[in-house]
Amino acid sequence: QVQLVESGGGLVQPGGSLRLSCATSGLVMNFYSFGWFRQAPGKEREGVSCISESNGNTYYSDSVKGRFTISRDKAKNMVYLQMNSLKPEDTGVYYCASGGPSSWSVCARPVFASWGQGTQVTVSS
Image (cartoon, rainbow, N blue to C red):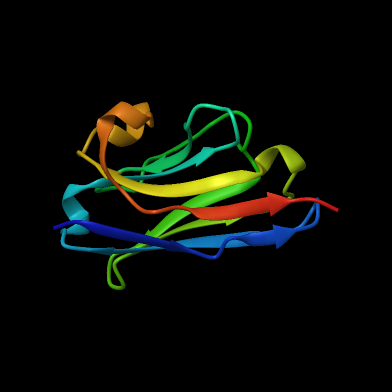
């Protein structure tokens, strides 16, 4: 079955950087979109960034555009989220998810079927 395992979260000061990693198994990356979602306490899980299965089309939410970069390495079965210029409002649990070929363009929770367990990101001084 599909397994997604996130790592790389932690505590960082405002303005700092983190790189999240998602190790994938049980799927062929060429056939799946991938996304990073986050959930802050008391809030809905929101799509932060998504990437397509084939030509690397990407989506970014307005709140992270220009600061975050999503990428994937098919040879290593990995998906990454580089987060720069972090802000306190970026705090939350970050989840990696896989979906169908068109899921990336919507980048919303209902169209992603498989999820990792999440990794905590805390931005605080």
